[in-house]
Image 1 (tube, rainbow, N blue to C red):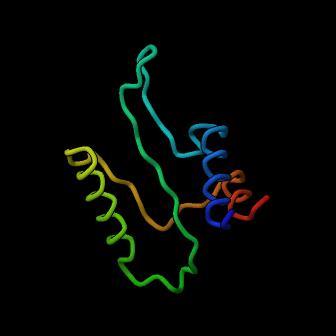
Image 2 (cartoon, one colour; image 1 turned 90 degrees about the horizontal axis):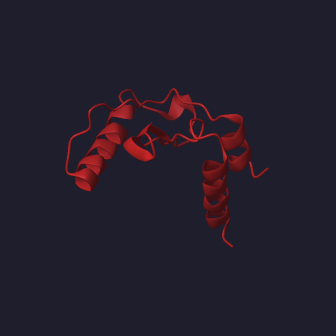
Length: 97
């Protein structure tokens, strides 16, 4: 198995079996029906010194565009930026533990 395939396999396992909030999967449920879904993503890593000013805008716009193409609607909100950190489970997956 290629390293990236292994990474994705391990990542999906951590997402499926980890606490849903720490995995970036948030939803509002009403009874047994999931009424609302919020998609989460963390991507990186890169040294802060390598990021030019305004570097979060192109990624934010790409996500907004993909959301629009997928759902046919504009998002109600989009929180993003370079201030995220990996939780312990995510760090273990990235470092192959």
